[in-house]
Length: 444
Picture (cartoon, rainbow, N blue to C red):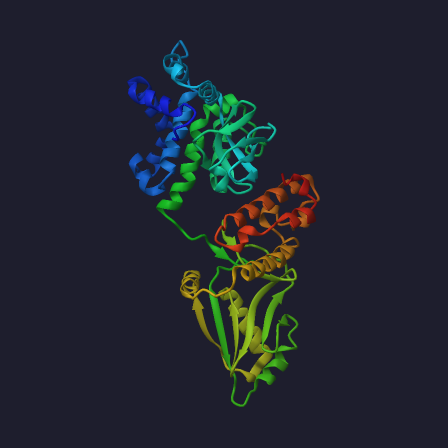
């Protein structure tokens, strides 16, 4: 914990008092005990698994929770006791901060309007309170728009600041928290979650629990997500090489290929194999769908004439078989049966990591990436999105319920892009999408 706002003195006071030290350990057990028990860990293991600053942040969550609790018939509170005994040693501002921290309840906030090194705006996702601007230096340099954080907001004079224990909540951790609150409070799973300060204060350990239950499985048993294409086929990269029959020339093959309506030429020797059928996203539950598109149509594969052979590259076994049948039927005796090489996703990733980096100037790389994203997202606006109930963004935004889903979807892709800090993706401006869908007024 930072040595600011009187917190350091209060920590020292608790550390020297057996009663308050034991109470702090009990509160810490409520915050991290269920996860430690579930995953058979000791508190010391968190130092290795989570690394800085998260073990101390979790300790800080318990510490801040303790500050708002009372004990015994006299409703004894540690902040009151400390200020009564040592308050003379703190400035008026520090005393006011400790009193504010004692009263503050944790909540889940959405971050926006970030001014690095100065301030950010927080919207409480668990209440209807108006967004609040907080003064903050360090966190504003690492947080991105639409990040979700669990923290306490403390009034300080005419301003607001955040407490020292800040947990950043990825989507799965946020869902753990919301589900946990609904179950604890016996609320309708479909109801909009609104929780007052007293309840959030009593439920403070749930924030750390949800965060740990989302983070630890990924660390203890990291797994690559199941990847599919837009047809729901498991990704596996197939290259089919169709050798020419004796005496066949490239122009003979080109002539036959030109008659196939699903092949779109990109030059004399290269074609995109496309489909106008909508993406169905029928893969396993939780799978991540990846694919390429062109003018709103899914690209099933790529064909290229190379010397005395035609190659077809696709991303699944199903498309490989479909492409083989299409080409053998169209080309007949012009080609022989194909030779097929297969690469797994892991092998493909390894090959790309080993490949030498292209010497492309940063400005040019940024332009290329941004132009690609422009084309990709313009196509995406007319593609069915699973999180939008299978509707396209343009369709979904027409209803009130769909509009909410579209806004959440836009925030998700913008936040994900901003977190690619080593890529030009991080600098991509999504404002045009908000304008195109008529929801720019909500991007605050």
